Length: 201
Ligand SMILES: [Zn+2]
Image (tube, rainbow, N blue to C red; front, side, top):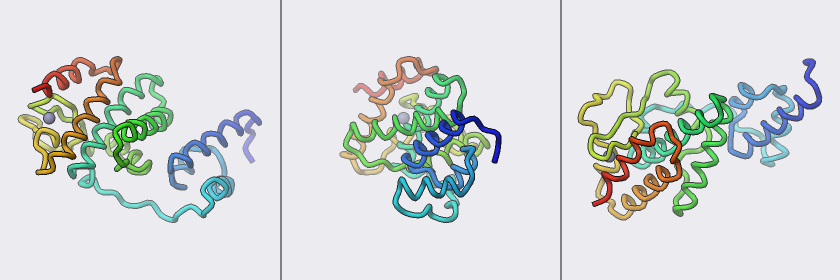
């Protein structure tokens, strides 16, 4: 056993509970929470009522580029960036807070969350390893998840160039705009403001 204080231990347990409730997988918990694997497995079973699934799914960057996934990913990452500033760079706190906020946003607009916790976390990892980045749409100036090697000039986002599913598009656009409005203190507030103005027809 490590020489953790009771209080530290309690904090780690609470952290694990929060993460398990958000849908974190065992591999993630082992990397981020200072508790033994045995305790994490027990906590997981108590909270979820089942054993943790084995293995981490190998997610591909391309998944985040498909139409609906790209809207959700971009929405999530814009919240994450804002949160990271709010919590002074604590990545784990930014991740959990922004994931909760993302779920709330989706719920507000009656949609289904497309990003589960593991996908959200994987996206953050892809950003950290420079496999993806945010690219500014040349039409609405919103910031969207794109391949790191994509040509930045003349980029048109998934909202400005949607497939022929008009109803969904209106809903997604509204959700994205609402997200922008919920973040007056975002570091790129000016960009987002411009994005919103650009969408008013
Ligand atoms: Zn656009």
